[in-house]
Image (tube, rainbow, N blue to C red):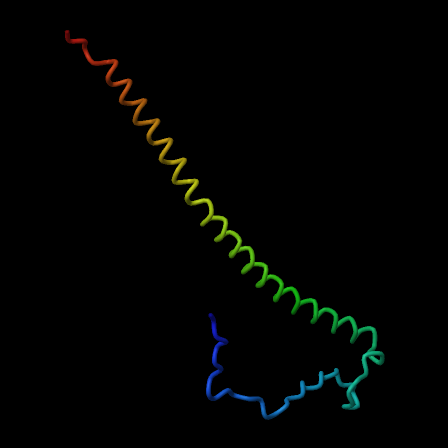
Length: 109
């Protein structure tokens, strides 16, 4: 019969609630925060370019990590098959070489 696990005697609890920091909006020349709809087309284009650059850097890093992990996993999965194939080829080569050598020995009755 299994028993339910006993919880630890001292369990940390959250006593303070943290609110996320408000997103900072670009400021206008007057020093006031600009609402998203009040940006000039040039400011919007600059913001889009900065966001795309950040996405590009993050995406490139994450894709590099993901592809590296996939390559590692596939390589590890291939190792047993590669070993088997290498062993088979080496055995065939040794047998073939041995057979050739034996056939070239002078026959002695």
